[in-house]
Image (tube, rainbow, N blue to C red; front, side, top):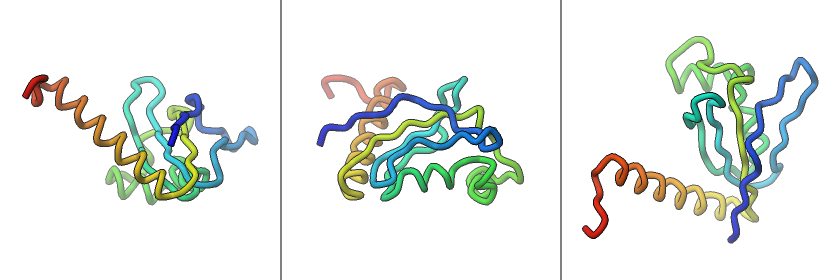
Length: 119
């Protein structure tokens, strides 16, 4: 499986008639705060476009409320950007997302001094 990420794109402004550009089928998505680069959401999905649409702040107040314990979304859609990686199957998407999560945890541990090379 060769994974190719799309470029980072800002969430669309619905009032201007902009649309989301994402795979209709399976894949992995990442959402980050544009200025800080802080990851806001990440995961595999059977329908990436639908998953990202559900995450759009002005559309998913219940999601953000449950996730952050707030009435209003923590981010405005224009503050966020996303990228996607299409896969052939939902199973491939889950496998790819799992590998990414594992490698990110390893990098974090190494940077925080919890794992040293040669151990």
